[in-house]
Image (cartoon, rainbow, N blue to C red; front, side, top):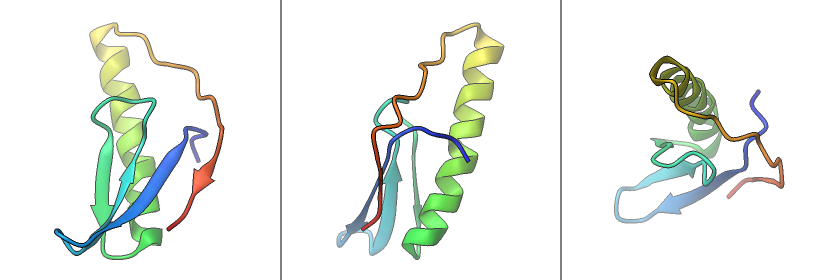
Length: 70
């Protein structure tokens, strides 16, 4: 499990839970449950970091401030 801050909230408009990673621009996913969103965001973080590495872009060190559930 990655140690980046994850914010999970309910989107009434989309009727799904959204999980965002503020430290990784554009890294956000959704799921039918908060647990599903959290599982999906872990995969999204891995893909984000792999892509940054392939492109030679820096990857921020996780600040690990909080892991928040909705």
